[in-house]
Amino acid sequence: MAEQTGTLKVGNKAPDFKLKGTGNTEFKLSDQRGRNVVLNFFPAAFSPVCSSQLTSIEAEKSKFGDDTILVGMSVDGAWALEAFKKQMGIDFPLLSDFYPHGEVAQKYELLYPNGATHRAVIGIGKARLGVGTALVGSGENVAARLREYVDEGIDTFILSGYPHLEEAQRFGKHVMPQFATQRIEAGRPAA
Image 1 (tube, rainbow, N blue to C red):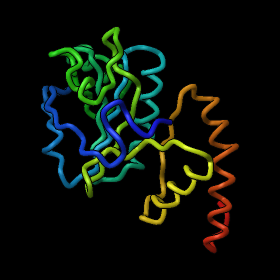
Image 2 (spheres, rainbow, N blue to C red; image 1 turned 90 degrees about the vertical axis):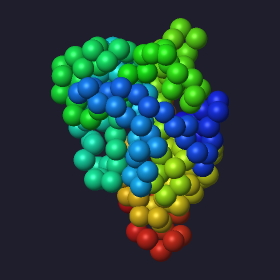
Image 3 (cartoon, rainbow, N blue to C red; image 1 turned 120 degrees about the vertical axis):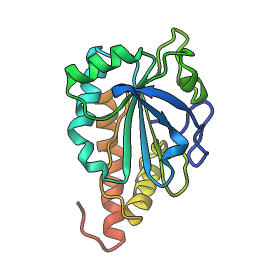
Image 4 (cartoon, rainbow, N blue to C red; image 1 turned 180 degrees about the vertical axis):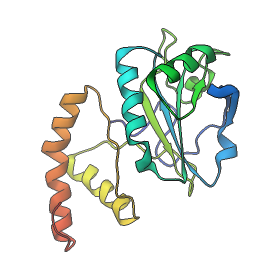
């Protein structure tokens, strides 16, 4: 898991943008102040991995809470995203970064040279409108950062890494034991 993109680090202000979305809507990031925002960048509508990614997010979206706006974003055109949303049964908005091609992905430095977006999840907190989703470091450091989120009242995490299986195994081997140790040291029962 990366802690930053090429232009953003945890705590930086997220670049504002305005894009057309599914349902003939328009989404402007700065209009979402006071709410948590989760931007799910994905490379291509209808691709197998993106289809799985977005239907998994749809299945878990209730865990984000009512104060969170969840959106998907790709360089696909609005009509393609509308068809993709309908076929996949996705209920959250999908935003088209089609024209100018990849302009928002470029602001976040998430555009591949071939014109597709990187697969990335950017969380923007209502308290400090900054990027706050990616953690990187030793198992001990990542567990310590997770502890800070838990101490602030966050009790649900959606974790992602690539390659998926290897990152999940690494997380289980290096982070979870540290996190359990920290719970015991803090006088809490191990999960």
